[in-house]
Image 1 (cartoon, rainbow, N blue to C red):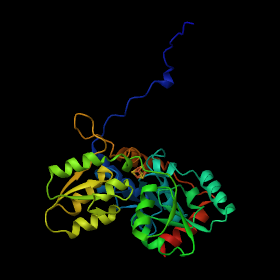
Image 2 (tube, protein in one colour; image 1 turned 60 degrees about the vertical axis):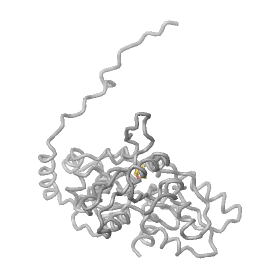
Image 3 (cartoon, rainbow, N blue to C red; image 1 turned 180 degrees about the horizontal axis):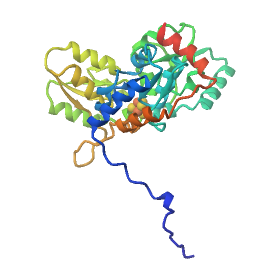
Image 4 (cartoon, rainbow, N blue to C red; image 1 turned 30 degrees about the vertical axis):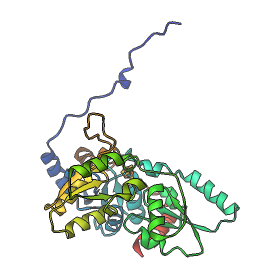
Length: 336
Ligand code: SF4
């Protein structure tokens, strides 16, 4: 059979990227729009440095969730990923919460769909298991509404200590963080088999090789990294813990940082006396650093999109019924 190859319809031809705009002009425009629209910008440590520089609040998930409750403007722009925008809306039902790109998701959150979690919890109950479900904050609001506790890498130990000793723990969605928490808390956990696409690709061989090339360096790793990376790390902690650690260390040091590469920006800003080297993902045979350590979802945030969402008032996170239940859990876990 002869197949005729037809040209794509005009609507299917990819449109060209819009022409690049001067970042300084964009920053000025955003500043003016923030005042005009009565808006506050929150930015995660994993978005581009120029976005962090124009934000009113920067931080990790825990700090930003708390900061979101202190915002006095009527609008919040959340430069991060979708579940973070949901959390900001849950904590601030009366406010308009905008996110620059609706497609900025999270591979870790996606690895735990709410219907599958509900079915697994039901199965455990039918088998007579007496458990609490503890979820890492990197989950959808629908999943948050199904759990007993929410943790971030910054408060996980403290929250797990609050789970009654006679309960088992079902930990979702990050198996690596769960395994690390089992180790540091001594609690046994049923682990959901999820993982983050960025932290999972760090290669132990590459890390050992870079460590050899930098005698005297310290390795800092996020607990979302696999166990073999954590085992050879000098500091294991979430992004805020990393920041505090480097601020407190006066002696100039080279740090190898195993987390999303943009984290170098706030570290360098907070502690310029040090040298920070992002740990690469799996290297190409050429030995060059690949870009696996950039989160493609976080990278969807741009100055242009922030300007546009302020201008148009969208995309907006809209309140859903299950947000009320998720709010109870977030309140109990993060604010009390
Ligand atoms: S770095 Fe990983 S956990 Fe964080 S938003 Fe990206 S995919 Fe999700």
